[in-house]
Image 1: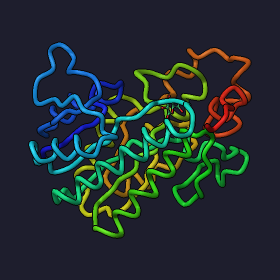
Image 2 (image 1 turned 180 degrees about the vertical axis):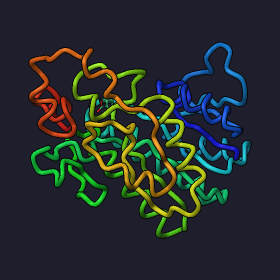
Image 3 (image 1 turned 180 degrees about the horizontal axis):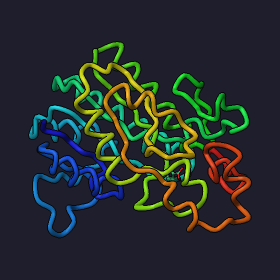
Length: 266
Ligand code: 15L
């Protein structure tokens, strides 16, 4: 499959472009910044909030699918977040409709439901049936982007898989990550399954590894063939307790739900 990967220079993008290539996909990379030294294959230095620039990439490359990873990874003001997550997704969806590209895999985030208290979780696990409950403007923009994917799935029959990624890290770093970790290899498995599952329609899943202490239900991922292989538990004895742990473990969004992330919207 010929896959356009946005945010290819980012931390997830660098792993996913290599991982998808290893799995036999042809990757067309797109990012705001030029290709890193040694990158092999097509690369477009483009802002994916610019619909004309995005349309030109589609016209030149004829992708079969899109993996949309571009976007600011943390909390900024609301207009910045909406441009970075919602406007970019709109530009890509419009180009997909114009060029008959049937599938998008979207890097959503656990922060779309980050304000959900862990005490409210039935059996300790949050399912994809739970209502959105963002913890930040970042999470709010992810919820909005998911809503736009749903709209384009309904209007145009686009298959759109929104992966609510937990903590994408080489290895767990703090105790919250025992629940939230997504390993590099599992991330590639998740994106590949989301690209190749037959007719998922609009589908939301939680993007974490098979963590013993998971807070999110993996069922929605398994339903489309995502079978995670890693588990943060092996690091449990190596992660010291920190004063922040109580707050970080009380709501699923962890630190993003804390007052240090409060800022004016505009
Ligand atoms: C995310 O969605 C963020 O992009 C990343 O910076 C981390 O905060 C991660 O979630 C997490 O919850 O650990």
